[in-house]
Amino acid sequence: MMKCFASRNRLSRNRPSRSRPSHIPRTVVLFGVAFLAARPSTGQATLERTAQPAATTPITSDSVVVTDAWARPALKGGTGGVYMTIANKSHSVIRIVSATSALAPATELHVSTVHDGMAHMEMLRQLVITPGASVFLKPGGSHFMLVGLRKALVKGDTTRLTLRLQTGELVLVNVAVRTQ
Amino acid sequence: MVFFGYTNCPDVCPTTLSDWTRVKTALGDDAERVHFVFVSVDPERDTPAVAQRYAAQFDPTFRGVSGDAATTTAIQKAFGVASAKQPSASAQGYLVGHPAQTFLMDDQGQVRVRYAFGAGWDLMAADLKQLLR
Image (cartoon, rainbow over all chains, first blue to last red; front, side, top):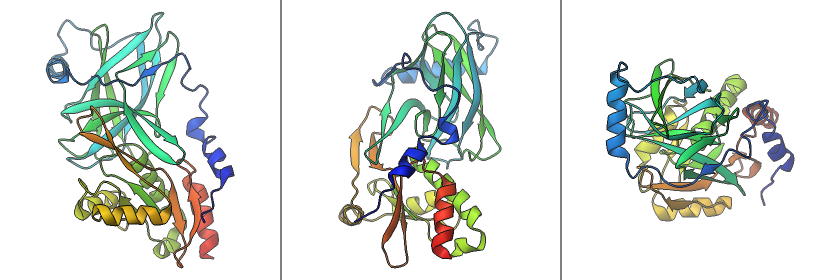
């Protein structure tokens, strides 16, 4: 009854955003287990540190380099998606175990998958990046989810996301709000 | 153009509606002849007003609609698609698995093209231009 253009489906896999020099290496495993259960207290602590960069915990990292962090505009009270490229410049495995934003009471890591024409999301417990590898959080794939936005994400604005590594190290990320 | 999604979706839905804004721009004046409709498959949380507000944030002419559960199911059935609530530990309470395609329908109500997620706004715009000729 309905036409389905298989060639288009194939084409879609070769769009520019999907043909970056490297895709997520197979060795980068995304574990699909919730990490939020213990969140409220750790989130609070992270936010306090964010507000006081002079604290002893480093707020930047030589081993984690984040580029092209961006989010689409979203309504107040709604849900935002944040994308970025995260490179592991170190010689050890890096695990990003949580993220916080002053804009949302909950920031979660999710991955979208499209299978048989259906889009699904799954919450991830952590993002594991092997030494020298990069992960690409991008539309239709992994993303940070800002749940219950306290204010709208407006095009042209910049907001901040704090990534927390398993080591306790925090990485501050400036996120540009743009449409694509 | 028809897409089934939910307003708490931060990724596939906004990506699709964002693509639509580029389709609309590419169509120029012809865009007036195209309706862009976002159908919520999460009527439990998306009231008609919420769905409309969500769609309109991308473009004021985009329409967001929501009905009761029975209507939503019937519409999806007519398109040969389905959706499903997914329990999740997310602060959202639950997630929703939803069709990822955009349906291009003609003015006779026939589906002419079904675009996979990520098929590209340029393909959609090219097809619409041809159909509107």
